[in-house]
Image (tube, one colour):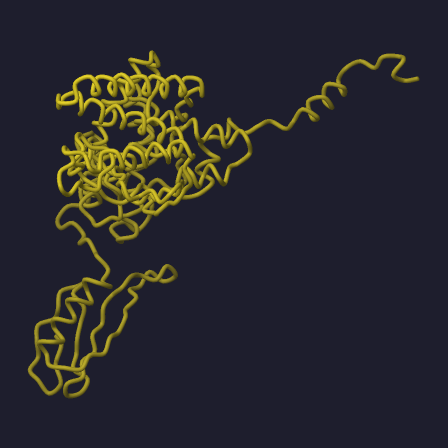
Amino acid sequence: MTRSYRGAPRQRARRGDGTRRERSPGVWEIRVVTGTSPATGRSVQRSFTLRGDEALAERRQAELVAQYGMHRVAMPAGERMTVAVMLKRFINAPHRWSPTTAYSHEHVAHFLIADGIGRCIADRLTSNTVETALARWADSGASVSTLSARFRVLHAAISWALCERLLWTDPLVGMRAPARPYPRKHLRPELGRRLIVTAEEIRDKARAAVVERPELRGRVLALFRAEQNVLLVRLAADCGARRGELAALQVHDLDRRVLSIELAAKGSMIGSTKTHQRARLTLGATVARCWEEHVAAWRTHPLAGSEPGPWLFTANPSRQRPLQPGGLTQRFDLLRREAGVREASLHRLRHTVATHLVSHGKILKASARLRHRDPSTTMRNYVDALPLDDVDVADELDALFNPIVPHDIE
């Protein structure tokens, strides 16, 4: 029960809603739980002082809880929490995930919920149970990347449950994660050049067709898409942007040669990037000129309308709705088949950027250009691209174990 200054007792507030009390007439103290101490595990509170009436204090309390309050998830009532229940609460809890991460985590979590491992009691889960499940999934044809993704989501849910104090101990402590998928190979530079040449040839043919019959709307739109395809390939090969980042680009994101990337798309949703960080990088002079010429040429076109939208990759010059990442993939698939480079993909162009920079010893620049959260991610994924510097060691060992020739002694 809480009591205002010289007032009647009131019902105790629900956990997580904060508390308030009138310390003196018109002076209120509001307390909000903002987190837990990593040392003691106890709640950490923050106190606020407010002058005014009770109605104002109640409104301010709700605002402070929404702004600073710690979002808690109640322990499941009744029987002990299963892995499926834990995963459902994990997915439904508030997270700072990018749209791509949210989609992939939900997809994997739904599989785990329906799988037999979802019926296990969460705090009785053992490494042997998980190893058995991994072996069963592998026998059913799951790839290395699929196994790694399922384990990562399961472990992330356990870590979240520990932070929310739904679990008191980590049931998988000491268990090693399954092998991570080997990064996809990069696309050889000559194949990337073939893609660009093919895209430019298609653009030139579309331009000639428009000159011949400029009144045909279909030919005009074909030229618009052809110019965008040239820009798409050059951008992917220059900045190594992820597919969702390319789909969310806006025409004003380029300032001369400096490109700002702060949005990413997943399906029809547009949100923050995978690392929730705003990145700035310099584009090559050719791709920057291609961007500026394309935007300037279509800004005043009749099909653009009176107020063109902000999106870079769209279906028509009005730029009102961005292409979804799947739409970019469809365009790129048509281009790679036309160029005869069937193994190409937008993400392999990203690997080409990383492999080239790492092979020249530019690890930090590769990490910045790929927008990795930490250079260790770049090292882990592209360590095989590092140049070897052990020739002197190899020669030394070669000489050590070779028989000594008599003239060497002299």
